[in-house]
Amino acid sequence: MKPTTRPSLSALCIAAASLTLGCAPIHVTTSTEIDRPVETTWALFADADRLGEWMHATWDRRSMHWADVQASEIGVPRLVRLGDDGEEMELMQTIVAIDVNEAFRYTFEHDWADTEFAFIFEPIGPQTTAVRCEFTARPNGLHGIWMHAARRSMQDRFNSHLARLKAIVEAE
Image (cartoon, rainbow, N blue to C red; front, side, top):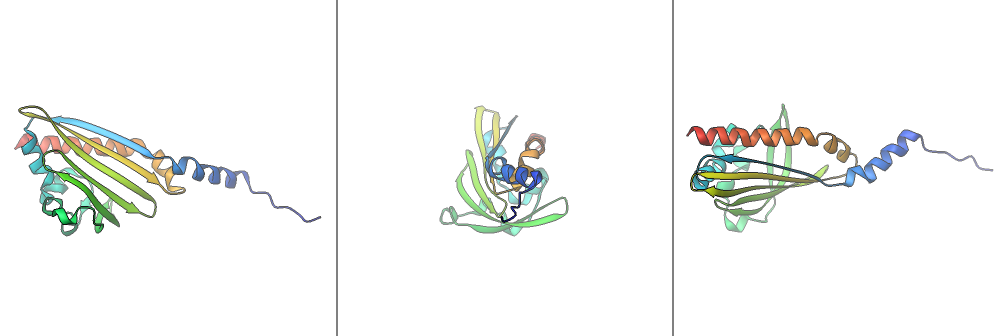
């Protein structure tokens, strides 16, 4: 009789987690109201030179020029570089839609997850704009465990982005 090898309990747990939790999409939505017209709010949001003022990550300015994106570039993947907490990564970004004063939608592709972002701008009065950030990630393998564990942290970070955007727009 041939000896059989049984996987350890921890190996089974990791395998099960990567097949279930690791594949489940992650959705985060945050929003704020900014006491300025949608055109004013959009103008600051779309100014790539000011992105670092409200976004925590550091962006390579040359790769983050969405205000200058031409219609022919929408849907075309391009390499962008961004960093956070001293680490830099390269991602493939595809701008899905730029609807001035309404929405900016893009995706990032990486070996650990495919993500979709949307910033939605809605006037809720002549001088007030609702801004909503929607994030969806489809993690690959064990990265899903980390992303699910970090979901609250991601939500806090997106809330912080919008709070900073609000403060800057309202201060001008």
